[in-house]
Image (cartoon, rainbow, N blue to C red):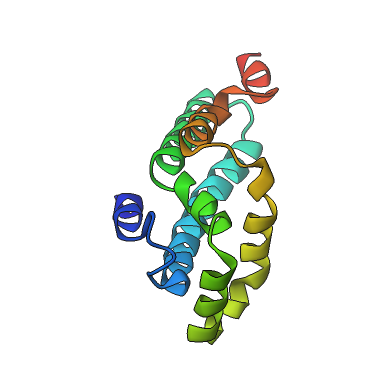
Length: 139
């Protein structure tokens, strides 16, 4: 999986690796995930009585959550934990990183609310099963 490659390449190394490259790869993966999700949601929304499509949508959502939880959840936590001096150095070294400043700032703003990597992973993997969505899907 591409996500495992990104994880092996950047997890725990954002202070020394190119943050711009890491965000670029993360963005590409997130965009692909969004395209698949959007297509499935739009397909299902136009055919609400198609049980096979409903099942497929649920399976894809579950798989995406597993992949994200296992291989990408660390990313937002690592960005949030970057030292201010390290981040300033990254901005200075790679001016194009400023394109992602609002994204980085938002991840860092969430730092006080972040849990450990294991807990965040567990919550992400289980996200398809929480809230009203499973109840609505049941009926």
